[in-house]
Image 1: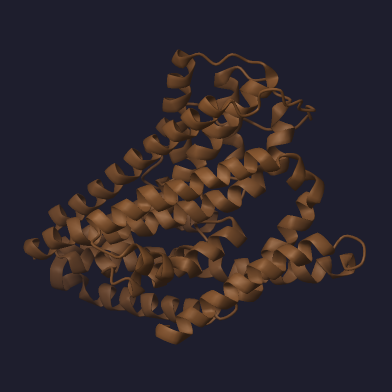
Image 2: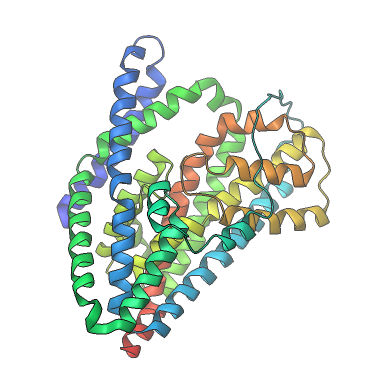
Length: 407
């Protein structure tokens, strides 16, 4: 999907997003009878994307590692990706704490507490994640949708194929065939993305309603401005200075993935489309097949911004004094918790519950946070997907030459 077709699809996705928001606002009352049909189409679209996530991730990663041709080069690409994601997540968390603290967001705001039973993510979740990196049952990892275990299993298989050489050739040919099949199916699904985004965003707007959107409009506006500036300055700078790619070209080519992420609130479900965008940007399969799935798993820059932002906002609104020492604890905790946040809709709720507990905030704020979580999640998912693609473009310049030299 190149040139004119790509631009046309991007335009239709954007129109689907706009009309979906308008339809979601108009649906209560007159068009409410259409809600089951809208939910049905939205569910079908999401399932069509999810259907190919894990075959595509596994096969493209195995093929990518094999095409690198060197175990050391594979490790170098993976290490650089992890370093990139951790560094940007830490900076995003710091920005999310600093801005609302300086602006005094939430001061003088009366918040009506709402009960919400949420099980907080334990702070040891990162250690549990590390402990469970290697899947005891790879089939169960695919069935349960455990992206991190699928990634590790694919890396193990890919490296093993490298060491076996010609003995693994039949399996590599099979994996390449499945990879091509997955890409072809995703290419067809792409044509239905405008309809899928229309139905997904209409359901989100309908569920939240205009009252919820307007009630926290100021903090949401400030949050979205922060994420927009972060994307433009941080990701734009990385793409231009490290990736040697024009900023306008980058954002033009990644719009299908960005708009899909905004409408579906799922970086994992957007992975296939992100892969297509990376291909159009000229990112090699060796880089994108490793950096994009890894980013969908651990790159949660915008989640860090949202959680930090909301912690300070609720602290100011509830009159809870958060000292600079506590801010440092929240900063570290937020970075670790956000890395363990799944790239699915609502994945940050349990992590925020743990962070709110660490900051000493009343449990009643969770009901308020949940009511606007999806509205925050839309922008955050879009931001995270852009970060994954920015990393791929940068890695094409920093890690890919090393991989070529190692061949």
